[in-house]
Image 1: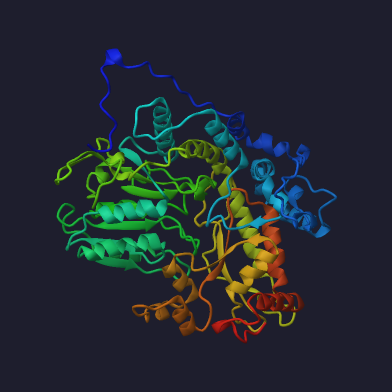
Image 2: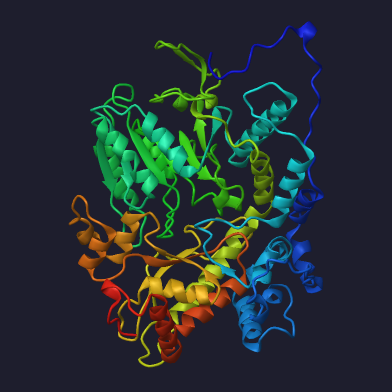
Length: 580
């Protein structure tokens, strides 16, 4: 009739169900023990050694020729260049609080060995976190020892999958300290969670959709649903460094407040942390908007990986997250963490497999699934990966208290060092940092930062003109550095920090990125460097060496020539004739 399994057989004839229990790996038992004492982990740093496992067969050929600084974070060794050791020791003198986070260096050594094997420096955590190797081992071991079936059945394999799904929901709710009125809807990603709200929110002619200009395109995209239904869309302008001014935000929310929560439902979307400007917006805006009658949704995709967030303290109606941004695996799974009372207000525009109990065919009668979260999970959930959500959240919970302090130390050092770089020919700056910089330096484990751990910048030539981002990305890849360039799916913040908001206002229907770049006379976007769970001094040092090389005319010119050759001997549009 619908998508529910057949009615259960009478109790007298029901076969006895097999008892299932998920066995936690010793790897994850070690996690909880490893975080019990900061002092213990710090005091043991002198005895930690870098025990290499056998090299994998797929190892990249270049890794053996690259210098490694992996030991620097634990105990300087004779194999590390003198400059690197001296820089690290100077860093520790300036940031002694970094020593309290040495447990994360142990994590880097044991769970991210592939970074050393490949020689890759990964600084794109805002794009996606790197998974810990132990998480994959635990998950694949579980899959290899169990049979899991579609959750829309009552077989033993299906019961196990359903049990794992329930465990994952409970783990998500516990991780975010959610009160009992919350549930979890599994989606493909944070974008899917936001779209689910956008397409189902009951916008009307008198409704408002209020959001910040500094937001991901998935948040902007909700305006399409609002506009089609006649709702007003109001933007909170971005500051020159991203985010918004709280006073301006309150004024705009007040001017567009709903006349009636029932007759003209209105929605306020808050970006918890910008993925390009590094700004964190005040979470107090959730309560303020709710007091005016708005429903509220939080885009926490960039916030959750490195910040502690409590739904008990900030009871937003709905929150969107992506798990791969938090702990790297699995991709293709996100969640809408949502109040059941809010779900009940949403009006789904269609139904699908898994969301209904009875469907009349032919006809128009349809009864949705009994559980609210099932009504919003189209088709079959990604049940084979959900056990990794439970384990991944346990993993992240163990190390998250140490992360803000570590990233604060690295980011302050990074910013200070970048600001000192100059061209060897003119003495002019090599980079211009555009993103918001932290004003407060953390000193203790458990403290929270007022910004993220991202630096968005542009590289400058000796005359102060912007060097094309595509050249920087190419050159970084040649140094085995993974970073990102562009507007990061956040055009509002990109326009604000680049100072091209007036140009943004001149766009016309059908405009292309090429048209936009031609109008401003250069490539659009920034170079984004983002730190995360496995970041250490080695990574920052490697990127600083690369940035410093961009200030050396001979080295930069050689890379430029190689880049031009890789593009067939010419570069297009705004890059032609670029003075280097």
